[in-house]
Image (cartoon, rainbow, N blue to C red):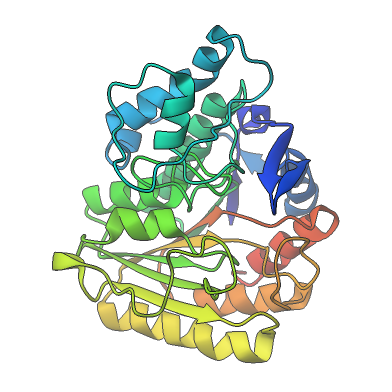
Length: 335
């Protein structure tokens, strides 16, 4: 399996986030990339597919905000990373917004996702990484791995959060559908529910979204990912959420994975996007499932056995010392 990555994805480097009631060092660091690159072999170059595939998923006003936010933050006389402090739960009116603080609140749903000087460039090339991996599969490869950073599955059409700015998996899925490679399914196996991906495809019958994640009754993002969320309108039935309790190990995870893969097959998917997070690891510092390194190979093999052309898009995973080994184990399941 080819691995795609661009060095510009490392230029996103916020200093801190607001987490569990206090300032903390930013967890989604460039060191995550280095851990994976050291274990996963040769990297293929990323090509630039331009802004149009991004705008096919994300609102133009949100993309403009994201490109300009840090410069506007500095123009307002601020130091460091741009981060909001007012988040409207009602009356979310995005325009006109004269202060950068108002825009940050309107386009974000948490205070854990600051915008640093290099955030736009990194997010842009992370999306191009996913598109390049898709192009490889569209050209005949069975599988490809997009080493995306920053991750993407918490980003909605017009909001950021959960360390995510552009939704890499959704951008690739929408492009695959436009190429006629569908029906397209997204399987999300990150510890946290991919609320942004769900929102983007909530009413879209062309893309099936299945997610295995920690129960949002106890874990971020809290407000999405409950089992009764099945899509809306024409998309009703094309969303499947399979929340798991904290402490679930492989014996409980495996049958849930089979249920998700069976649902994808029954839906008739011809192309698969996998939002892969290694934060289901037993010693991940911000998560509470109990998968071990060897279990990731079983996870990869179970997906590969279904025989679908597959693009794997990297999401979370914060046990940096073991992250590369966990990702390499997952990819080995596709061999």
